[in-house]
Length: 425
Image (cartoon, rainbow, N blue to C red):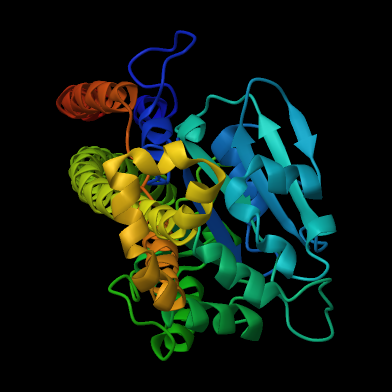
């Protein structure tokens, strides 16, 4: 995931001046903005109050980063991500840290309830995963500082996986939780959703667990549409004292869903890399072809403009000759030598005709001059075209993009090796 992202950011080298696929595509020569794939997947955990969302996150990253307890600890969205040092970010910083949250501020009251916890943990696949702890959903008079259901549905657009946890005690069939589940299933994101009954060890007797599972399933049955609907594994967090309650635990299935989402995102990003390289390559060919057409059109316009300019110049010369013929007798009276030339005498002979039709001829020549001058100015508007340096740079871009595209095969091989190593583990 990181290697794919770096091809978009810095290209084939991290040296100063190196250019990535995104910068090439966004350049003024191409003006073809690309969306850079993210380095991590995003997992949103949804559920009723006390469903164990925060506890699961703490267990997954191996650090008590989120508050847990019977009290409603989570009333906002907390983003848990990996970083170089432990840090906490509040609302505005969180929006800046995750660029896809730019439009999240449209929910009144949500910014003060956005938090980011940055952890240095290397547990499991946390370095590839951003976890979102959502507000605990409860019924009754509980007031949230923002529209919690709309915010969760909006966030679903930006995540890769949605885990829905049901608490087997008390709030499993919370009306708000079921409404969120129904809305998620009526959205384009239903294939992202996976359901789990958490805290299975809180119900010691098997028949009681089965009763709760049936109750949850019956409530879900009319609200879900995806193929995972009735796959409701039960899990619980390993106990600190290491004791085994003797209850089947599907917590590894939760982790496998996260791992699966990572693998699917790697494959999706590799496909995107290939597609984006092809798009940029095609865009280069397109703009070069368009540039040739523009240059041919400019040449045609230049010829037309030159012809119109020549006609305008001839019209101006005609007006000058017309005026000269009109005043030639007067000039001859001033200086007899002027009329000694044959062309001057010819003008003198034309003077009566010119005088009689001066206004008409002058008007025609003036109109022709103005029309040709305006026409030349309009026709001679050249479309901007590439310089030789621009064309050279586009050629370099094309070769560079091909080299980036060639990295896909090596990245696939690296990805397949990681899968075989995971199997060996």
